Image (cartoon, rainbow, N blue to C red; front, side, top):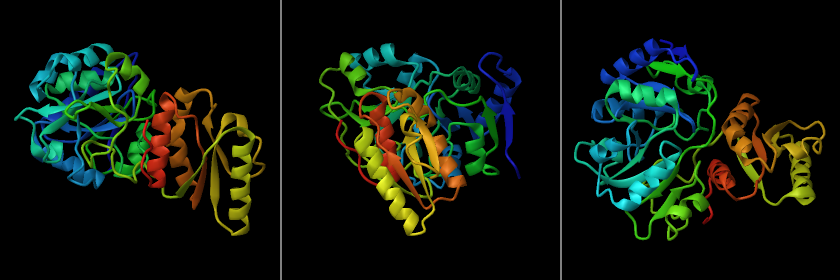
Amino acid sequence: MKTDSLKTNLFSIEQDYIIKAANIIKAGGLVAFPTETVYGLGADALNPAACAKIFQAKNRPLEDPLIVHIADKQDLFKVAREVYKITLDLVDVFWPGPLTIVLKKQEIIPDIVTGGLDTIAVRMPNHKIALELIKEAQTPIAAPSANLFGRPSPTTAQHVLEDLDGKIDLIIDGGSTAIGVESTIVDLTQDPFCVLRPGGIGIEQLRRIIPQIGPYRKYGILSAGMYPRHYAPNAKVLIVEGNGKMQAEKVKDLAREFALQGYCFGILAKFENKDKYGDFNVKLLGPGNDLVACAANLFSVLRNFDKDRVDIIIAEAVKEEGLGVAIMDRLRRAQGIKMKHV
């Protein structure tokens, strides 16, 4: 049975669609919906049976925690405990927005949501459709990205359909997402506080509020998106570091070698290098000095290479600053290696 997709937009949200989606959530079903980062796959966060359907639909390991989405800052106290001033300082500056905060969980949160941990990851999305849905459903919504586990995250409703058609109840199609990479995850239960996953909020921004926040650290699977291989297309990903002429020459050398060996491959290039690779299969990430555009395009480009059925993707690295840290994190996880410290 095909999954229904209801198209709406931020300027004229179809309230009937929101009500229909909220009723599905209340009844224990699954709804994919847009956020400012990527599309989420939502279920009632207080209903363990509903949340179990998320893991089944995505083929997601049960030990991989879900992020809980709320629509009112005061709801943070309903799902989390030990909410100290430093948490409220972050919330005041970055919510609604692409920041997920890890805190101690309240007892009402089922263990399946947190992977059996005593902590919960919470965020308040900066997207009218997502916020309207959470309010109408009258419950926190647990929502990882709306894709098969390990695949590039969905930034359009079509991406959701490609992975989950027939496995979920409804998709609210709100067009392409704005940021294109997932939220930054900050763990406030560790000493020192640290970034578990880089994302839409840069560590430089976080340090304006928490100067002592630690660099990216890996404690195991403590939050969503922490598996070493994740966000991955079907093809093998090779990252070419550096920039400028030297980087382009390395890419061309690899491309010539793979062509001689008969591989089907593609090149993920920055806009300024689009004319350097001749007749090779080139897809553009965005201008190297516009990391916002690069982040927004990343997952769509990886999925488009899958449509070309390439064996290998040669990916140009971008500068690791601001959103570039999140972009390189996703590329390295697509390649299957650990993120560098930030």
